[in-house]
Image 1 (cartoon, rainbow, N blue to C red):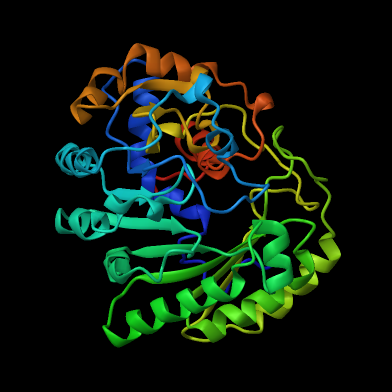
Image 2: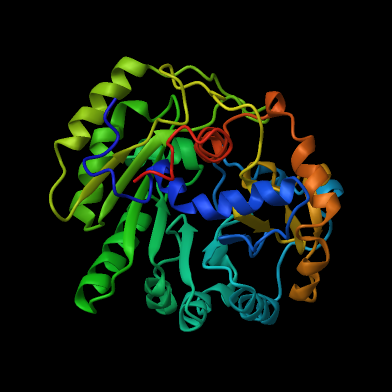
Length: 366
């Protein structure tokens, strides 16, 4: 199934091969032979609140206010986030993704963060549902390398069904304004219309793609939602034939300035979860820091107390007390992939096994 036109893109997990030296350092650390390098990226959740109610949201534990697991702190102080950026820059972290325990732009301190991190030489990205992009400070987000716009619909009716609010006209207007500002002021941020596929919206993928193109974004990204998570309340079955047809129509919309990514390589041919690796080894390439001020093992295990690495608050330097510790190593070793649903790092785990451990690509021979 076609996923993209050019393989040199951000959504191609083969980019993990560029982390080869990082992989080698992780494996040496796993064997107890060196220190663990800093993560390539930190994924930051500024606050545990959202103004929508998407049933497929990965952070439902936040939104249901499960304080037993994630504690009482639901909002990171603004000054802390800036001090965190200072530390990450000094530590050698390359990327900062402002994600969400909900909608990050509802936190007023987020707006200036991309510009600040950018001034430190870091690459920045943000996930947003686009509901607040009518804020006068929205231009600050255009300092990001990319902005993921979570829409998940192509019509007003479906948007209301999957997002819980009748705000489709509002968010499409906001996206168009953002795209016009980007163009008029010559920013380089890539705007990406995101479409998570669930049974309620799978028949309008192409319609959403055409709308994304009309709004002036650079990328359209569609992939199946992980419907096999234990906290999901809907059927995991999708119409693969219908979705394939929709995907092909989307690819016909591609131009030099508008790119389509129909990403399925982390699923099997029926869009069910697949694990074609044996061990979880890639998690140290990224560190999630949540609104409770703690770091966690991986983005798929956010909010699960048993995967908590340690506190990053109030002093960001406290990360160094537990990053790469014996406890961290044992936690990586303890992961049972049979208890995992879709794995964000599945391809990276396979690359470590096949390329670093087994050297199947004979990397010493160009």
